[in-house]
Length: 307
Length: 330
Image (cartoon, rainbow over all chains, first blue to last red):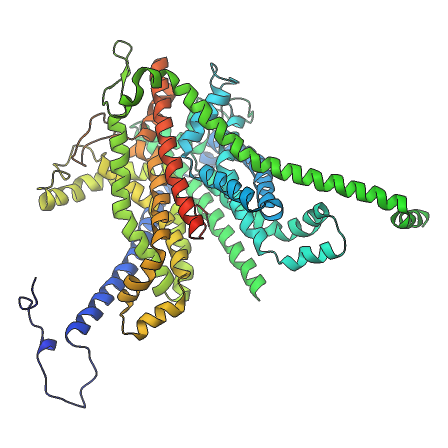
């Protein structure tokens, strides 16, 4: 569009000089300022749209799920309740955490205490790749390696194998997060220990890890929140389970929340939908509270360090 | 009293010191070995994973070769037993591409808002809320998408787009169910926004204040500062952030499987059903009919693995090259 073709606004007309008039932009500057304001509105709108989506999703889950939840729903087995899925999820995620937390912390220690530039680069790269692995691929791998009865080990479906799969997802999260926490610890602390002639392993165990403990806990909680909702691996590894009774034996397939929600959502059955909403509400509230709590802990410890 | 005396003696006697030194050396070596072992474990798992998945895909790779990528025949029943992932590759790329097309600009705008516009108090609330969006499990988001979003898309968004932009073949007539590639793209959009916005927010915060002030002093408006200073200095990082989001979208299985409708043909029309590599694996892997069927699903996993690892490696390479933490979860 050429300049002449544009509609001429009031601001474009030459005006007589009036020293008392307020300073307002005219012409091109005015257009630039309006455009700038519009982009600011758009950016603000985008942020609040994202929050609106979160609110809508959470609200729907609460509105549809609250009706299903009762004491029986939490403590009884099917058809009244979902206790087997809750217990199964807790055990599978627990096993995953028990495997992933030590390994993740050790990797972070390696990265911050021992690794030289190239080794650190290589290990960080493997962590990035692991972090970016699609969950379904992790499931396919663990299925092939441990579950498939025609495969390498061939153990059949089992809850603990689900834990192994979740640990593959959790390790990079814990390693990355712990690395960040360990970086925050003042260098002077370990230098003081070095100056006293304390061996490195004693420094790590008695100085570095204790002061990082809170942060490691936070990171672990965040990764638990992530793992608790992970469906794809468990769909292949721990899905053929009974929901009629609570099982605490991790050597057989265990019912679990995410897979149950998935299975119910694939059946077009209204009663099943209501059970799935209820389960979703339980899981989403656990996950949101865990994430928010962990974040609050981070904020508090940051304030402590800065003050 | 006497025990205290002996430990005192033990600490100072040359023999006691030797013992402690030896103990420390063993302790140091053990800790180093354990840490290095854990660090190597990641690489071992990755290699094992690539090997196992490729090995299991071998029958299909031998039979179909690279033609698997373009052929659209997927007939798992025994009498046909032909497999081709063309429509799945297409569905994966299209759904992720549209998710990135919608979600990328929104996420970058959110990053700009959080880093440059929002007052500190507002930022402290909005920022964690946007990140919470990433914490919603994919299965719940998919369930919500199936029961709430899909009917809404079918009744409102699709007719609107069809009537206004219907001359573009992408926006055809609304189908009978809301399950479509379009709905899947919307769900993927929701999933990648928090990832891209968190990384780009940190990038924008790192842009030196002086440069922005300099531009303002020359008369640039806020948008011009963003356009002329903030975005150019961070463009490589923003691209890396988008690649991270893309990697996530490409590999999402569950939520997509719930809303995409598991169609087997290639349609230009976004409002028809489709399927992606990851969703097809999630749908058919547990009940695969034949060995070849299973091997073909493994082949899909190999393709997904290659695409996913490549996008992450490129993102992480850009991140390292331009020194920001690629792939880091906050």
